[in-house]
Length: 247
Image 1 (cartoon, rainbow, N blue to C red):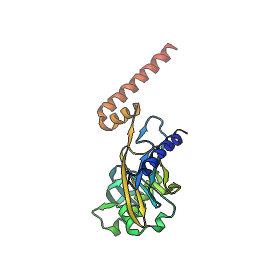
Image 2 (tube, helix red, strand yellow):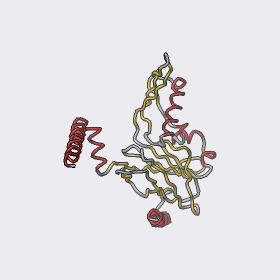
Image 3 (cartoon, rainbow, N blue to C red):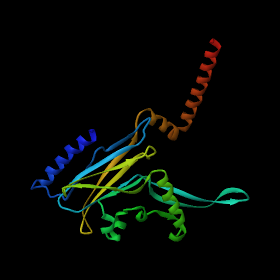
Image 4 (spheres, one colour):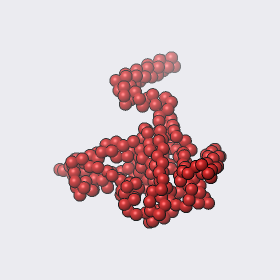
């Protein structure tokens, strides 16, 4: 209900702005929240995107997580043991990737437009280091398959709902294992196969609360984290022994 009320108010504001004579923006869009807080017990979050357009057309959305290098290894069985036989390192892989569009957009859009927008996993520019495209093909497919299994690459195209040819909305689901960092939310307004307008909005996914402190110590201050863990374990053992002796 809270999301619905917020979206209704924002859509009314966007609609009013789009109808003013001095406003010539063909596309107006915003997010229901610009921060996804990853706290203790985080089970995932749904992000709502809404907006208005000045004329009929297609809306396409691309959400990308912070780029990161990823290595895919191929295992072979050797003398009864599985060993790493070969590997390919991909650079600047989006740590999260999700798309949404109005119904029939992919069928109407020119292939060159989809490639330029990197719309769809087949159009993602996943660059393999020290490998040609043919050699890297199976490794690329394995990378995409793994990211889909982890819920970090969307399994399909989420629908964008358009109301009265002016207002639109869609949502993107972020799983509990979503990486932290600054995301880009790209919104495209396409008319007759061409991009009439585009808008990019940053989205922050951040750890908050005690979980953030533990994560920081574990990954950035490993020595301190280890000492604290040993101290806590020793204290727990001493306390348990003291309680049993008292009993």
